[in-house]
Length: 237
Ligand code: 5RP
Image (cartoon, rainbow, N blue to C red):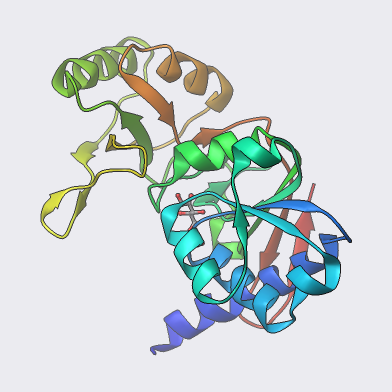
């Protein structure tokens, strides 16, 4: 592993380990998606916390479910559990108001459903995800497959008329094919520069017919725990 990859690994792991202190007996917990969430899942397993604390877990993706189950953790269905105490998830960017861009791992829809079903959402991330203004990371928009070209045209018009000019737009690919989300949709990634009104933009995007959801998470996260390569942890709330 190169130095940069090792640094990232240490940063993620220190944030994940710090977040374990939020787990209390009998809690119902949502497990996020991505490499940081996976570091968390591994720490939970190594410390045998599901059994020790009698925790119920709900997953945000097939990917997280597979890893968790392969490590012997039991994953329950959100529809049965219904309400969660806490969700611990990663993010691609966070700003000083704890607005997020998520969806780099393609699980934004399930992540938002799980986060919206929890008393508290805490993000664990490398300090490199902290930005003053959201927008450098491409914004994922999940759209239904039917009529996707028309939906993209309506998105383009929205951005044009609301002054959000993007420098690039790309359909998400995976292994040479169009990426299909766990719920059977496409993702289109928009590269902006800065998003000055993430809340308004999230609402406007999500009103477009054919859009399922976008990777802007505003008003959902109450704390971000960051780790850095030297193991230093900071909490933003
Ligand atoms: C997946 C996500 C991830 O939480 C986000 O992409 C961060 O991933 P990582 O922890 O690998 O940096 O939103 O849809």
